[in-house]
Length: 494
Image 1 (tube, rainbow, N blue to C red):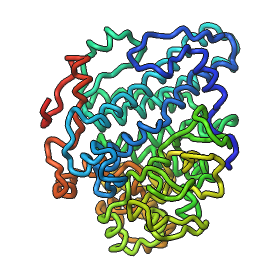
Image 2 (cartoon, rainbow, N blue to C red; image 1 turned 90 degrees about the vertical axis):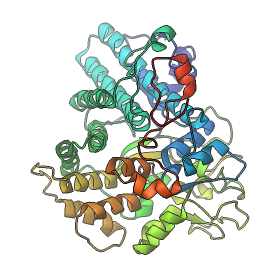
Image 3 (cartoon, one colour; image 1 turned 60 degrees about the horizontal axis):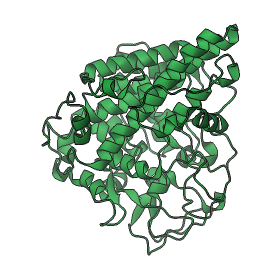
Image 4 (cartoon, helix red, strand yellow; image 1 turned 90 degrees about the horizontal axis):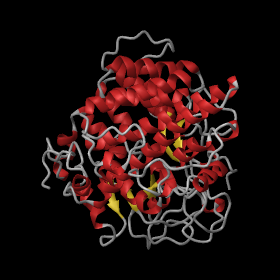
């Protein structure tokens, strides 16, 4: 079992107690009385640790997350059983509407993350008033920057999903929240840019205390990703070039290694959501993230089993086969009836023919007695391979920067392909698009990439996608009932 290296677990637990249940209530809550001693530097990271903890997916939310963020793409099908999670199946056919419970769960989830980040940011003001040491004040600003990275991540997902959303940048009362107007997407992107610029200015290049804390390069990579959606090619190229030039990150030797538990927070990782069972055999008080468990083989033998959601589609398999992409196919797919190199069988009795191999965790690492699969598996949000491909795309789109790394689009693309055992190809946009699909399959990028490339109708139209409607998910109907100022999303019936 991996060592306890999750982001300050004890601190997150301490804050949960001291904040009188703040992490268990919705964003509509007023500012809690935390009871923290703001004069102690040891307490500065506690609110930020709680913001990190808010990013972990609970069992129910994990089901909603994989549905909204990936199953709408051509790379994944719902999986599981026909009767289980029928509203998740609506993403396969684009038949969802404003009442879909998974969509509302994601609205709440990302606003809850923003709420925790807002609380952390506001807490830094209180620490700044009470602390006098120069080192302590530096730590305050660094922690403020970390919280802004987390908030930027939340709003990046909100704007990608819904387009027009309220910007809530402070703790508000229920009455204030219920009267908030939505901001147009461009204003939301400007807000995200500012948060990330603020973070880049103050967050260090690395931390020496806890693995996995979001650093300057995390903020740069996230901003580069946002820049692609704004077609800000120069900024995307500039930031990814700086990450490459830093020499701090590299591809793991084997594609498989990028997803192994023992390589979490490793050389390829710029942004993860941490999860750990802390070696415990049962209970739910640990910092568990159910992302991997939700995708485990359905109907398999314990402990190598899960709910079987977000399975690789036949379209993805055919794509791998057509390009001779053997390495990435073998890692991305767990195949019914086959045994993994580590000796774990995906039984013939499993419900679905394929499962997501990127969240595979060998049974010999498991210590839990039930519902155990992949609870030690971190969510990879941004990998170095993504950075290389973002750089290649921005340069191919005509970015005018002079790279300090010495890289070209072709060099970045070739580096990713080399690890997969594939020969170089020209750095055309179509080749880069295909490489993103192959490299990042089932990592919640494909649907959003298709939309921003303007290819969603072409690729997803046969599945039910309608241009002018399905580029965005509907703002949930129950949220519009709570706040009449929220607009109806075009194309949907409320």
